[in-house]
Amino acid sequence: MLDRLKERYLLFKIRTEQDQAAYAAIYDRYIEQIYRFIYFKVATKEIAEDLASETFLKLLEYLNNGKEVNHLGGLLYSIARNLVIDYYRKKDKEEKNVPISDESRLLYHSDLDNRLIKVAEINIDLEALYKSLKLLKEEYQELIEMHYLNDIPIKEIARILDKTPGNVRVTLYRALKSLQNLTRNQ
Amino acid sequence: MKKDKQALIKNFKLLRGLEIGGAPRHLWRNRDRAQFLLRAENLRHENKHTAQASNRISAYGLILVSPWMRKNVFRPMLVGLSSFAVVFSGWIATVSASINSLPGDVLYPFKRVAEEAQLTLSPGAENKTKLQVEFASRRLEEVSKIAEGNDQEKKDKHMATTLEQFKNNIIDVKENLESLKDNGRAAAAVAVAKMVDRKVGEYASVLDKTETDLSSLVKENVETAKKAVEETGVKAVEVMAAHTDTIITAEELKKRLEDKIVQLENRISETTNKVSVSTTSINSTVNTVNTIEVKKKLELARTLVLTNDLRGALEEVKQATKVVFGETALTTTSTPVVTVVQIKSPTVTTTPRVVLPIASSSTESIEDMNVNIQFITDTTSLDWLEAQIMEQDFKPDDKPEDQDEISTIIK
Image: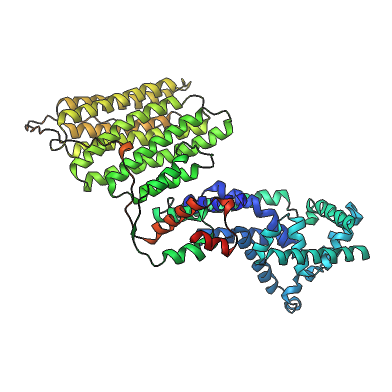
């Protein structure tokens, strides 16, 4: 709750004074989450970096236009998600036919092999984990990434995804179970 | 199963810290952050720096009231109303707990909310000026209290911010005085100008005392605040000069001008003592030239006061103020500037001046001012009102989650 109040106070500082420290606090709070969110949906870290930068620039535009922000995290994720969708829509012909919900499977580029090699060098369990994560359906992948990698509480995830906490809890349970099964089979 | 889950979670934690697990590269992150903040700074310069008062009130509402409550509970209640009378001594008592709070305290934003609300709802430039003076006094008081703290980093940060806010208050006072000079009622304008003139003297003393043991950034803030104070003091005298012989006597104005001359002379001695002796002859020559110029202007101003050319004297004082504060900047740079001194011949007026009795000035002190708000007629004020009502009823942690609880509270 204090987090939400703090967030609203930062937005207030931006709205009235365009306070630089408030902008910096918001950036520091969300950059890693947003980058990671995009990273798991795109092929390379360079693309993830570009889209993450663009997400925050779009946020600046949004705030600069004086639009009301009910939930900052939700807004950022929404901007990031739309940017990823736009990115894939602009891609070449063969990938245009892939349904949006299967975007994560577009990670079958050479970069995926490179990533797996790197993970395996560190820890074989991590390799299995990473591979399994990539095989999950997008909804499950997103929830696991948000809760276990980005440490976002369930209530917050529910707000971001516009779902009930109960719904998120159940889906997360299923996602984890699915991941465990996949990991065991690796 | 539980063991599996624990192992998974442990691996997630490991993965998270790796680039492969979505941790951004430090180099990219730092560069991107700098670009983001630069863009934010550029946007700030493109826009107006200060929000309109009504936007501020709505903005304060944002932090106090949840969007759900505003949309589903209070807006339906208040949407049909266009005006009503409310007496606010109740809520003032409530926010009085925040009156002694300092920057960095949890209650400090609420103190500022109350001040902004008072300013917005206060009618006329006279009342606004009085409030701005009061708030400037509070900012300075806060600066003094912050200076007593131990944490140097926090001290510097809060002092810098509070001094900046003080400076903005003082600039607002100056602008209001300008408006009063042109449009205000003569008696009220002079009364306010006298009050400001008295106050700026106090501010200058406090700022002088504050200047010890400060970081260079905060010292800079103190200097700009002093400049604003000095300019506002001169503006106050200007307002009085505009109404000399009708509201204020020439003798009183002479005294004020002489006080200003003395203040500037003290300022020059203070600045001269602080300037380190330069080893280059050019810099010390420049410093000497500027000090001489200012002293000449002040001498001339004194002469003009004696010969009753008060407007001429005021003009010299204004110019001297600009040079004095320009002098401070010059002593810290290495670029020499040559100024050409032009001495005006003093004029002697022979027109007899009729001295009228001084009109009774307002002796109302700021502390006596009641803030009973009678009418709220626009929806932005309603947003603020709504925010205050909400704050009366709810603490952030007590916010009701379900409809039944809300219905009970509304009843």
